[in-house]
Each structure stands twice: as C-alpha cells, then as structure tokens.
Image (cartoon, rainbow, N blue to C red; front, side, top):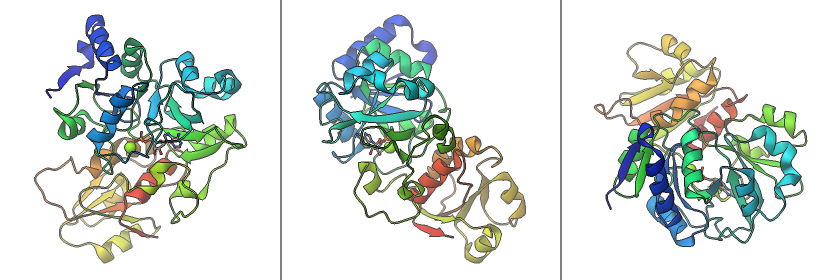
Length: 341
Ligand code: AMP
Ligand code: MG
C-alpha cells in the first residue's frame, strides 16, 4: 500500500471530499488532533475498524474512541438522548476530553472492544473536524502509535511507524497538547475519571462537583480491582530503553547515586542547571508551565532529539500532580520500569 501524504494547506474542498469518501468506504487515515495523532476509520464499519487494530497491533478488547464533529453525530452513537448531558458537554466540547456513554446499535462491538459502552470525543482541532465532516461518519481512532509505545505527537513519528501501512497521513505539525484526552465515564451511577488528561481534575470538578477520582488514576498502586477501562491492563507508552522515574524531592542526590555512562537524564530547566555538567541531560521545558512538559514528553520518550548517540537508560524527574501534571505523571508512571520515591 502506498500512503498518500497531505500537508494541511493542501486540503482543498475536492481533496477533502475524496478523503471523506474513501473513509466512508473503509480507508485508514492518520489525522491530527489537539491531543495526539489518531489512526482512524469509519466507526460504523466493522471491517474498517479491524484494520486499526491490525495496523497498531492493538489487543482487540482495548476499545477505540469515536470522534465526532457535532452533538447530533455523538447522539447517533449513544443509547441515551445526549440532551441529558448538555450542561456538562456544552462546557467541555469541542476539546481534549472523552465521555463514555452506553452505546447505540450503530456502533459495532469491534469498535468498543466488546463493551456496551462507547467513548466519544468532539475534537477542537480544525483539520480533524474537517476530516470528520467530509466523511459524514464518526471516526474511530486511537493514538497513532504501535501498541504499547509512546503516542505520536509529531508528524515524523507517524511517518516512521506507519508509512505505507495506512491509506492517508494528514500532517498538521506538532500536536497542541501532546497528551491523550481526559476520559470521564458517564455511563454508570457516578461520573468517574478514567484517565487524566489536558482538562484537569480541578477544572472538571467546577462543572461536575461529584466527580469520582479513583486511586488508579495516580498509577501509584498496582491496581487489582475490576478493569474499568481495558487500557489499564496493558503496558503503555514504553520507550525502547529502560525508564527510571525519580519522584523525589531529593532528585539531584538520587541521580548522583545511580547515574552511569549511557544514561540520559530528562529534567526541567531548573534541574538542568543544578545537575553536574558532565552528566548527559536534556530539558523537557520549564516546569512553571507544565503544558510545555506535556507537549514534549512523548517525543522525548521516543529519543527523537538525538539519533546519533546510543543511550541505555532514561532517568526522568517527577513533576507536580496538579493541573495537567497529573496526566504527565500518570503517563510516566505507566511507562516507567522502575519508580523511586
Ligand atoms: P487511545 O485512543 O489509544 O488513547 O485509547 C483509548 C482509551 O480509551 C483506552 O485506554 C480505552 O480503554 C479507553 N476507552 C475507550 N472506550 C472506552 C469504553 N467504552 N470504556 C472504557 N474505556 C474506554
Ligand atoms: Mg494510545
């Protein structure tokens, strides 16, 4: 298969119409969103959705998020009337947040990993909205990475993993947030956070005061309860080399104790200055602005800043759990082989 690649500026109406038609007919398309790049297909077409699982090597019980460009389209995918949730949804969509509802019969079980619920998101990225609009159907799309690896936030990651394995790749540079959506389960008795993301717990609690935040969100414990979100049980975001996360006030001393040749230290601007100059180290950004760190974290986990040097191990500093920091720490804890506290 030869992948057709388009820059966002090349997407005139007739090109969008052709891509939309191909999606309706089963094409596999990688497209940008404000969170990470998605690998998508017609959510109503079971066979098209199966191609996503195959391309990613994703376990078939790990459900896909369905992307829509309107509340009407979302309503078609869910059993209940979406108007019941209008107060919540109108304040958070379009944006980097996914809601879980009971699914309608239009959405095949292949898409939902066999569950009777469906994750739905209305992205704010204009290119993703155009792609969905021109296809006229909801698009099922998980992150565009090989299963278990860091999500793709830059176009070179997508090309590296999927060139000539999908029908289209649409490029829109670097993703705005660089972390996957916040997920809130609205299908049960109490609204529950299943995955922290760019919309923080603090912001959601202003809109949903009775939001439940389970311990597994912090990824601090070895979770052994029921699997609420199948993504919970699989290894995630793993770099190709070992990752040690040091979540300690005494980061500098801890690093001094374990650092050896072949290590690369991921830290913020401040720590970079405080660490010994002969230690291999790189800044993820200024941690006064955690959005900066969020935007960089997945691409750094792919070691894409340096292709020359062969590192053996990453040592990463911990960040605050507040705001988008909770999402950063959730991903780092899942990706880490070792966590020192
Ligand atoms: P990804 O798009 O690759 O970030 O993965 C989608 C995430 O959403 C996975 O971790 C899923 O477990 C979660 N998800 C999607 N649909 C559902 C659902 N119906 N119930 C619970 N979790 C879901
Ligand atoms: Mg993913």
